[in-house]
Every structure is written in C-alpha cells, then in structure tokens.
Length: 235
Image 1: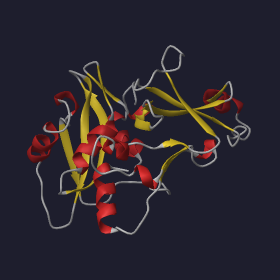
Image 2 (image 1 turned 135 degrees about the vertical axis):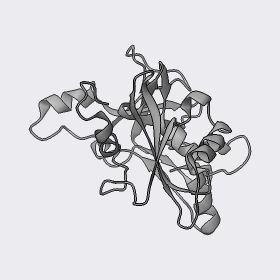
Image 3 (image 1 turned 60 degrees about the vertical axis):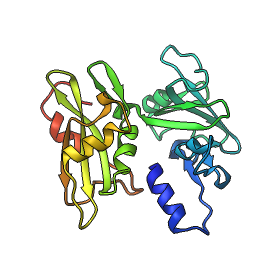
Image 4 (image 1 turned 90 degrees about the horizontal axis):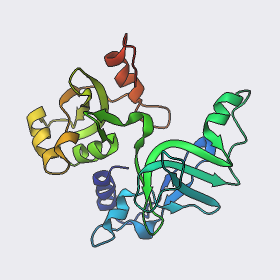
C-alpha cells in the first residue's frame, strides 16, 4: 500500500490495528506479513511502513540475483518463496508450471530486497520495470512519490516507447474531486523525492478510475497496450 495512504488510514482509523500481506494464489494466499507492531510512523524504523513485512509462519523468502545466487541483504533481485502451501502446478500446463516452480521455490515475478532483519521490500513487478536510457526505474517508487501529492487520488506509472531512451517514464493520473494539478506541479513535487531520471517525462490525466482486476490491482497491461500496439517489441 502506498505509504501516504497507510499513514492516512492510521490517522482516520486510530483504533484499528492494520496488517498488510504480500503473496499470490500460487503461494497459498500470502507469504509475508507486516504486523501491526511494525506500522511505525517515526524514528529509525519508520521505513518498515514501506515494507511487506517478514515471512509469514511456514514461509521462507529469498531474493535471487540474475546469476542464480541468493542475494545479500538489501540487494535487488527476484522474490522467491518456499513453503508447504505452494501450489502443485497449473492445471494441464506443465510449461507454465516449470517457468515459475524451480527446486521447490515459486518465482514470483516481483523484484525486491530483504533487509538485515528479514523485512521484505517489493520494488516492482519485473515486467513493470521501466528501462530508460540504461537506467532501471521501478514504477512503485515513482507512484509512491506521486501519491504524496495531495491532489492525486490514483496513479499508475508505465514505460512508453521513446526513440531516444528506448522507454520513457509515463504517469497516468486520476485527481481528487474538486482539485487540480498540472504536469509541471507534479514534476516539481517528484523532484523533491526521487532521482531526476525517475521523474515522469509525460502525464496523462483521466477523469475515470484506472482499470483494475477483480482484486483491485491496476491493469498496467491495458494502460500500455495502446502505446506498444503494432511494435515488434512489447513490454
């Protein structure tokens, strides 16, 4: 959940005790949990609010690097999960099963890190990462910055074709009712929070809500399709 939204929820619902989970159907529902005691708003451990918590009971989580080795703390790689509640496979699809199940682990397709205390930080879906001018931009980080602007209700960041950079960072924005914001204002806001190469180079303001799945995940493939249609390379 965006950090700014979580902080607002805690403020508006002071008697609630929040738990956040990370997982997928293939892992039996969830694999990690950020417990209420770790929803810390200030001090040296406040960064935990941006995490997906620690492995849930019965789950083991590791980060795999591109060379196939396990990552040290805080190194970015693909999140893999092992437990007794993993799926046995996709029905009648051994090819898809072998693509995500290897040596008893589920390869989630998510990029992330584990810190020294075992807290998981999800960077992005691997396929949603934007590679612009040779730099990796994780859409979740940019979206978190955008969500901190008071006018932004919904935000999704995608990569769109760029003749110069291969891809450029593009933000699709839904503003809150009764307020306004310009691309220039959002750029200035982001410049205070993230590196310059991560800031959106273009913006699309929508009146209607972003397209989502049945469980509320933004369908970024739908947002990308019109930009990549007819091209040999598709993200």
